Length: 459
Ligand SMILES: *Cc1c(COP(=O)(O)O)cnc(C)c1O
Picture 1: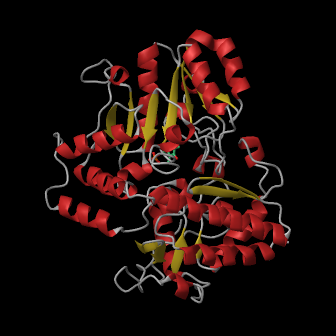
Picture 2 (picture 1 turned 120 degrees about the vertical axis):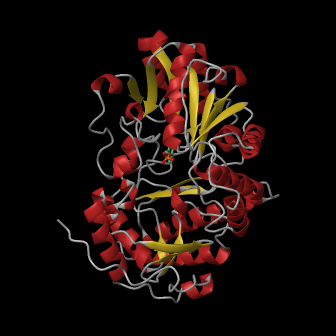
Picture 3 (picture 1 turned 180 degrees about the vertical axis):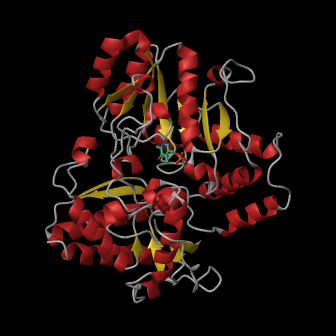
C-alpha cells in the first residue's frame, strides 16, 4: 500500500500568477513535479486510482502521473508545483468562458451570501428554465438535475414511461454518463481505461441496450425491423465527443429522426457536451433537428454541478409530481449552480461570441492539419465548432472502429511533448480539446508552435 506522506508545501496562495501568453512561450515547464507526485501518492491511498473520475488518472494514455491543480484563470491553469499551462481540458467542457470568469465568479460570490441550498423553489430555477427553453425550442419544459449522468438516466426513464417499451438503442463509442443501462460500449474514460462495458451491470439491464455503429443509420433501421414495437428510444451524441470528436455524417441525424418517428419511438439528443458549445442552441440548432428529449450539462452549469433534461410540455407532464415517472434531487436546481449557469449564458449571448470562438477553433484545426502535412505525420483533425480532436491515423474517423485506429504510442509521445511545452491537452486520444473564449490568438499561435515541434519529434 502507498503510505500517505507529508502534505505538499506549495499552496494556491504561494503559486505564481498565471503567465501571459507571450511569456508562456519562454516559460520552462518543470521536468519534475514533486508536489503533484506527493499529492498523488496521498490520494492513491485514500481514493481508487487517486481520483474521483477515471479520466483524471492520466498514466494509462499519457505515461505521466496527474498534475494537481491549484488555480485557473482565463485559458491557463497553475499546478501545485507552480507551473502554468495553457489549458484545453476546460474541466472537460463546462468552461467555455475560461477559468474564473469575473462575471461568473462575482455572481456566484453574491449568491453564496444568500445561502447555499434551500430544498424549496427559487426564482433562479425558473430563470434558468426560461433561458434553456428560449435557446432550445424542443425543451418547452425542463427538469434540473446535478450531472449529465442523471440527465441521461432520467431521459431513458421518461422515454420508457412515455412509450411503455423497454429497449434503448445507443451507439458504440458514445458516452452518456455511468448509469447501468448506458455503460454498453461506452466512450470517454470507460474507453480510455478499457472498461467500455462495465463490471457490475446486471445482464438483464445490459440486455435492454442495443448498440449500433455511429453514423450507420442502416444498422438502426435493421434493429427497428427486428425489435420494432419494443424500442423506447434512440439516444445519440449528435456530435460525438467521447471517442474523440466524430461529426455526424450528412443524413445520419435526419435518418434517426425519421426512423424513431416512423416506429413510435423517441429520439434523445445527449447534448451534455454539445449544448451551448457547437451553437448557442446546440447541435439541434446547428443541424436543424427537433429531438423529443434533450439532455444538457457541462456549460449549462457554468462550472458547477448542474444538468437538465427536457422536451415538449406534454411529454414532460409525465414527470412527478404531475405524472407517474419518479425522479428527484436534494440539491437539484441549486442556487449557486443556477446562478453560475445564468451568468455564463448571459456572456454567450454577446453578439459574435460563437463566430469568434469558432474562428479560433478553425485556425487551430487548420494549423494542426498543415503542421502534420509539413511533418509528414498521418493525422486526422476532426472538429465541429469549438471542439476538436486529433487522431494519429490516415483513415477518416467516422465511428468507434476507425477512432481506435489512432496510434496510441504516437499520441503518448505527442501528449508529453505538448505538456513539456506548457500545453495541457486532454490526457486521452479519445477526448475533445476545448478552446474557450479566453484563448487569445497568441495562445492559438503558441499552441501551433508547440504542435509543430511535437509532431517533428514523432517521425
Ligand atoms: C460528460 C458527458 C456526460 C456525463 O455527464 P456527467 O456530468 O459527467 O455525469 C453525458 N453525456 C455526454 C455526451 C457527456 O459528454
